[in-house]
Length: 301
Length: 301
Image (cartoon, rainbow over all chains, first blue to last red; front, side):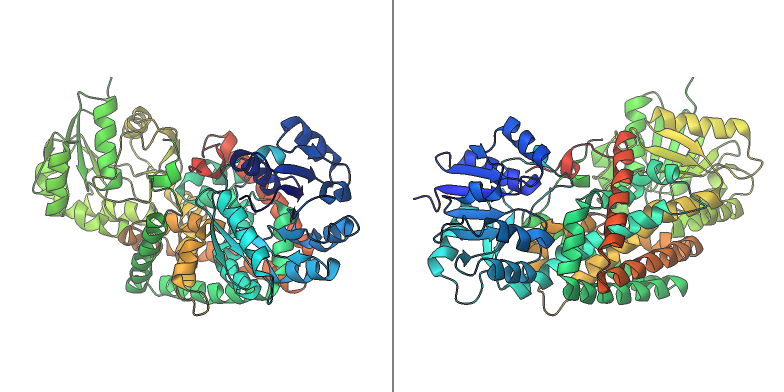
């Protein structure tokens, strides 16, 4: 039996439009309605046809839904939740796809006190944004973390988990606070570092930006991919998961300072020891199917 | 006319074995001899057959060469150069592929004062090491930076440039000092940051290493690729290009501190401004053919 039969998606960018496409591909009888705050995105979504109906208001999209998924930047979750409150059926389960969960849970609970709220975070994406960037297999073999609040209805949790499994994801549940700590390490800090280094490299005097671009295959280009991610989404992530991000950043800075000192004093053994240790992590990630096993991410040569 | 007819390669890892394979693919009449300090690598190189002859001593590999390329970690260049000095024909041009150039130029000049020395650095590679990791198309469309010392013979420079063009590379010449500054930004700093963050993530108490691996698709996995590069090679790079690396690291740390402050004080505009700016760099890198244009580096979904 299908976990839901009428899914409403608010926000039709990379993730929202990928969910719509994945639902169509894996559960073709489910009716998908969508809405986006941007009229241009709505028009484009209608042309692309990944939803059965794209509505002009958020309320019209959710009016008979049994699942509503908010796919907007985390800073917009509260306002978007308020905008559907009047039209939301009381039995509808509300979920989201935000990269930070404590703040989203608080915002959704405040705006929609009468509905079951089961936040989720599919750990998947590309550097591209917008309705054209989505595709049905985005969640295949990726993890989706479900973060139900304490005391949440077990059936509601099970239905959300089943929904994500049907889209191809592996599902794990944890509390929102732990999610925010885990993602601060595995996603937020990496993005912050990538944004920083791309900024640093583009602000040099002795080295031109054209040289940075030309010789980027030495390693720099790897960082530019995630530093090309959606600016609004990421601004909101850092502001909403501030404490965990600052804690991770502090640890990173300490480790970087230790390495800086090893370079300054010519301590080759300390460098070698770290550089050997980090290889093992890469190996595990590939063994567990979380990255492409081909060299260089499978880039063409 | 071919720039060289007898090429000797000392060091048969990823880069050395790729050069051998690329010479065979693009200049099949050129004789390639090779040597590696590791007997196991020599045996493997003989099995793979990418060189016409793999010799047991470095001297035997270079004895009638008109080009000798040292493909060993930059810290080993001086000793390897000394080991070929007695057998090196005086007319042979000596080059290398090291990622830092000032220190290598000094080491080679001291060890081989009578030969033309034209250092070079192909900005290409993968995270894999060893003779099995090499392939003939590694240098296709990548830049090779040639760093001739002041007063170097123009014909010798031209022959080295022509050699790399035949292997598929675009060639640029600059002095060694500028090379070391450019690569400190585009390659050495990115590797240092990647090694650091992978180390930081694997040393957490509240987040397990298994969680870091599981949820790495949120961004972290991108860093693990270059943090899986050869530890000896990279230890030597940081020690030999110390000043430029420390200078770049200082700039990076300042920029990171500014971002940290913006997060702490909730300055969303500062974050948004940087995150918008970094997108343009990615676009230029793709436009100039320095990265795969497919989303997510072309990873399979």
